Amino acid sequence: QVQLVESGGGLVQAGGSLRLSCAASGSIFSINAMGWYRQAPGKQRELVAIITNGDTTNGADSVKGRFTISRDDAKKTVYLQMNSLKPEDTAVYYCHADVMVNSIRRGYYWGQGTQVTVSS
Image (cartoon, rainbow, N blue to C red):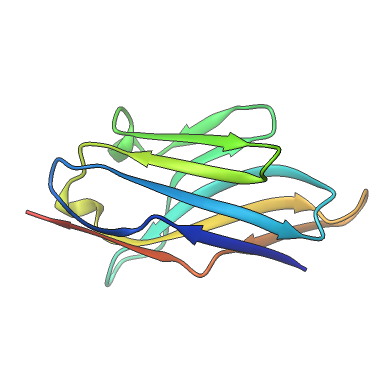
């Protein structure tokens, strides 16, 4: 199995910064993509940012220019640097991984989530 362990959430004032980390471990042959999603109370889970093994990135328009996604292949870790945080960024942030468990089997995994709260 594959495990995703997130860290870095917390409480911050508007305009502040946080850095989320997500480390993948377990039966990983290769990583196709890793990313971050978020879910605010009463809302659907939405994509925040994603990065592929080719370093292609994509993200929500609402975070462009403020959030940056990056990865460390050796550590099987993805990061989300969040700057200029706004109260509307408050949500549970979930790490997601699209991996090859072996040469032919693909799997999709979620982390447990980490709370980000931005106060006004």
